[in-house]
Length: 312
Ligand SMILES: [Zn+2]
Ligand SMILES: [Zn+2]
Ligand SMILES: [Zn+2]
Ligand SMILES: [Zn+2]
Image (cartoon, rainbow, N blue to C red):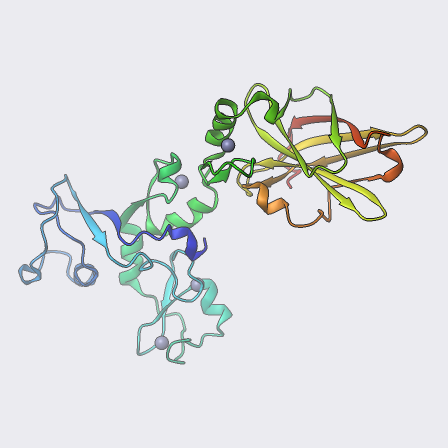
């Protein structure tokens, strides 16, 4: 997950689990954690923890550096193992350790197999909410599970495909929003497994398609390519890691017919697919297929995938 995905929170309110039920709640201090690693039995009375809030067996803490648990080299959330350089203790995630040829970018010392157990312990003992909490993800995860979860979180944000609308939420919420907030004419409604006709002005860039029953949104994208014709493709508004749908796109001219069978690509926002014509999974409709009144006349059928082997 890129650094920008940390939502820019200045403070992460997090909850640290403790093996012992502790009497006090406090602001978590990372030095305390290292102390706990070395000597688990007793808390150091000189640490004078700040009392924050009381909860059973855990305490609410504030981390003032939201990047504390990100790899300082690639900015991805750290996962175990975490390595550190000899002598100065600069840390690196395992993939960075290989990429930097075992040479610490901060001090040029060797980074071998020395693990940073204190950070690892923090990663597996401190829980935080998923960054998609605001979009409905209620998952509470330890920091070492945070990165992998967020890469596959079904609540990852998607945008309403209408450019004048700024609505952003989970895909399901975007589908609901589209149905409740936009006119019925804003999309062509269809049912999975049912072929439906569509007329698209050859000069228009897109058409929103919406499945009647579950509300899934698709974008029929159209690019005019000078001298060739129109390139059309269908994408699904959903997080990129989600598998797509089958679709068939067919069009006819007087003598010829064209048919494309493909998979929808997944895109969290329409802007992502607005940059130039697609390179794959497209149907090129030659100019002579355009009707005399400038329309692209197509038949479309979309259906859910049956096999997980065929992934987009
Ligand atoms: Zn890294
Ligand atoms: Zn170093
Ligand atoms: Zn999540
Ligand atoms: Zn909208």
